[in-house]
Length: 81
Image 1 (cartoon, rainbow, N blue to C red):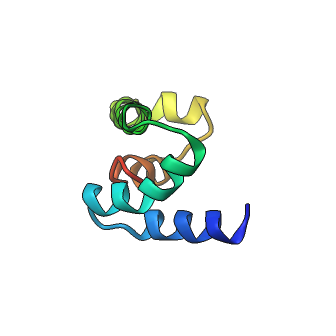
Image 2 (tube, one colour; image 1 turned 120 degrees about the horizontal axis):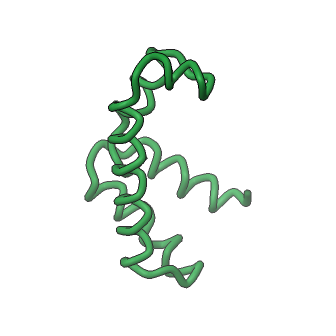
């Protein structure tokens, strides 16, 4: 990862709102030729995955090697992180 990529990643990771996250990603999107649609799709997929993770039973979490605390940490993240 180049310095510019790392800076962009750090700003996006630290973003506290979806708007902040999008603005920090906008330079990277333009440079990499990605579209707004691709970003929205990525965010939607994260939301869906985290929602599914939240609904897993303790037994299923054990099966995939996650503790309830690890699952909580993941599904508590905002979709833009």
